[in-house]
Image (cartoon, rainbow, N blue to C red; front, side, top):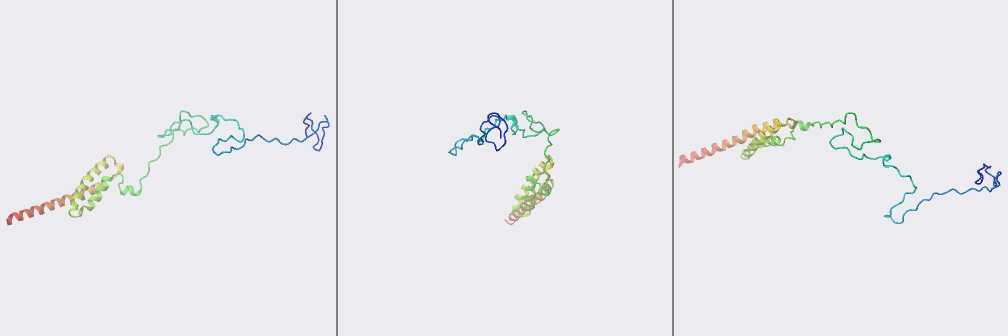
Length: 192
């Protein structure tokens, strides 16, 4: 035990300092001054212990200027440690998505060719086939043109099916009904 008056070390069981004769008392441990919590919930709370304020540079967080959404080749203007260094040579561009099996057989990115295909298939229906076949022919031409301009959308085969099958049934039914109409008119004029 250390004497509070002369700072001489004394045995732990002593009551009086053997150097200066002062009373050796054990002081109760000091309790830090902790502010009480506010009574209401909405009142601002004080920090329980006084911590020294930190400078903003020492605090972790995002950079002052965010990265541009277009790419990651260069760090922002406010770049400074502790932020990581940029990837050497810039970040790689994201890889394009691989086409799925469905995309290779069904031209989902060329809706005109796909519509022409289905209209051409159903153009064999009498009477309705006139309208479906002609629509398949027109949409097939537009889908074929789109597939030639941008080959990655595919659909040339579907467009050709729409053109050929739709054209065959659509214009075939027009010729058939035109021939029937002419035959009916000729037969009625011969009897009259």
